[in-house]
Image (cartoon, rainbow, N blue to C red; front, top):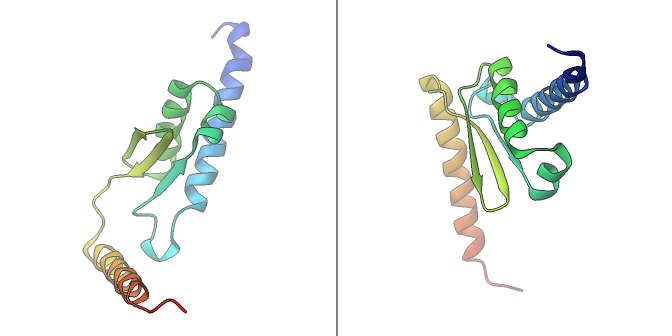
Length: 114
């Protein structure tokens, strides 16, 4: 790699490290590394640099974490998702957690405002 590309390579590596850290921090310990997701807003993306570089760095960070990383741009947000199939017990736990959250939201929506 030519010497003039060294600063760009270092910036890219720092971006990968930063994204890996954010992705790792967003994991729920009870899911044992599965169901990873991170959502980057417009301000995050503008701060991180070129969009194509952010997506590439996100996929690299995901590989480091063992993710099957998919990136999706929706509006001004970039979604980073782990699309691996989770083991049955983790899938069941996540489903139970989602059901409890939905039940709670439904109950709260039926409460009279006071």
